Amino acid sequence: MTLILSSKWSEKLLMLPESGMGYQRINVRLKSGKLNIGLIVENAEQLNIPETVDAFKEEDIVDIEISK
Image (cartoon, rainbow, N blue to C red; front, top):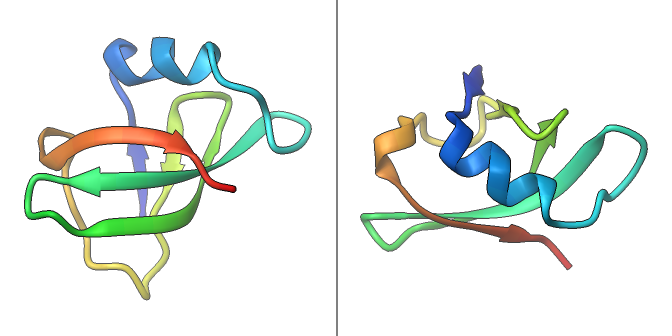
């Protein structure tokens, strides 16, 4: 599943370093407290949610940070 992020998150991602050419590996913290580690976002807006991760909506996101 691909989630297109709004400018709120895209602007934050543009301020963070890339993990590779055109993509970032990120951790996404949800309102539920769940932390999804190592998700890939392309071009600071296309968040790829693999089938192994429970689907969520943008309004469920509390924070995004670069995955180490």
